[in-house]
Image (cartoon, rainbow, N blue to C red; front, top):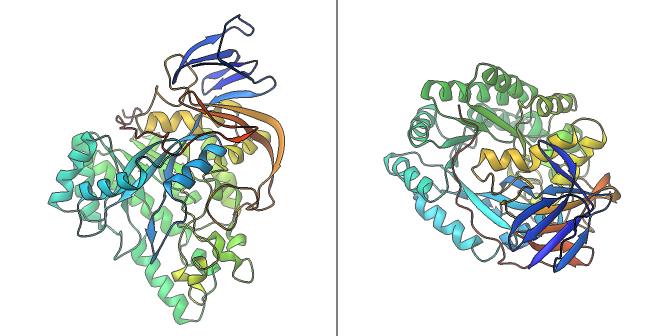
Length: 461
């Protein structure tokens, strides 16, 4: 099967050029001078549109247990929604429960995902029980293509790791060339602030943000960077939300340390004001780290321009307002933490291009190319070039859309961006050469997606 995507502007992280893209089977065969005569089984007209590499969302939580419930998107529904939004690869988190093994956790997540994904996928590993056995298993996970390991400085009693445990895991990561991912919030101090708020009768959703102040994210980020420096391990700070944390990352990067960070669309567009919405509506916006006051947003956009923030992922972890978020009525600490977003990341970041926050090329870089390189998928993914997988998005930069739960495809009963008007929209999506979304609707299939064993971080020095 050959497909010709003709008439578009091919945009890579390195620049944009008018070219036709010839796809043969699952890979890109050639970039051609526009109008070059070639026969193809299917032709897609991209005139007036961008042709970009499929998005890579490197931080999702499908079917994740949390707080007595579970995120509502299955691997089938979540990856289908991702495809609708121009994302053709996700990297999800396998979760080690305390008292279990990393290998058993990886097996459980394979059982959930294998044969159930509409797009390609990989895994990170959450290490919640650092001991001699799990440290040894980090080696076998890396050999199986899962070479990024997430630890938590938050959630005491569930995921929390002490500084000593983090140090041990970082030493092992350094030994095997893996990257440590860090949820950087001071969970011990946060739990004290939460208990104090509840004792004083402050129970509304906004208290979730007020009891997790930016200073405690900044402190934990600095501490994680220090531990990484002591061990020599690469560090990737997940879902960075606060200017204080960004300052710590920027300083480390200025010294040449292997420190990287991502942010998420919710921190670029939403704020503490959303957590304060009346009638318990603020619960829809409960995630950790929490939404920050608006003044942090300009700092995060600046970090994206300077590359102190390297990636934008979603931390997609959807819980329905009805029956799930409502578990926290009268006690904000019981609200399941998570915001849906896997379907809208590419569009929301394009709005940054429209507003002049980032360039067209940087849009592609932070949504596709950098995550491909950061997580060992490049040059197979993240670039429109001969030999790469034919993961392509034909994107209409002038189309108008209004985000709404009434029209999204995620398995959740609300949208965090309800009513937001965006310029730009996905037109056609190819996953490994197969058209999975176009004007006629969803043409893909659950089971099309393949597991991606990943190589090491390509940015390490």
